Length: 150
Image (cartoon, rainbow, N blue to C red):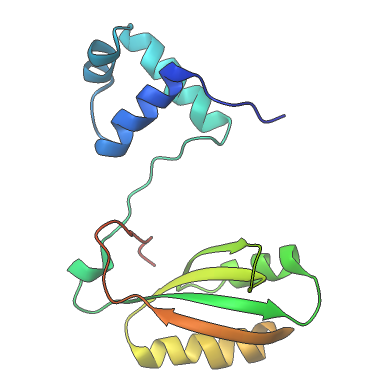
């Protein structure tokens, strides 16, 4: 059962979004609670799959990376199966079901446009199969988007 978050949880998350390495003691001081309360809340948020603390990179700070988002239309409604298959492709940093024009979206971060072409033609269209249509959006810039390094 999924539950929401309260104001304290939200405050903790907002503090960690600014700096995921911020000491719990500083967060506790700012939110007027005990350090142990912050530590326990963070642990519970992670256990409930509400919060995740992971390192992400700015692809625009790395000269050899090409970030892109790919929208996919499936031939059949096998969303969950396709997401699981797609997530196994090493350069795919994220994949999800969506509403709207595309059935699935995925984020990729590759070393070159040639590598992007390889993912599109060999790994997705021929390796995964069942894809009716795809559209690729190369991300030219962003001040906020961060990717997993693959």
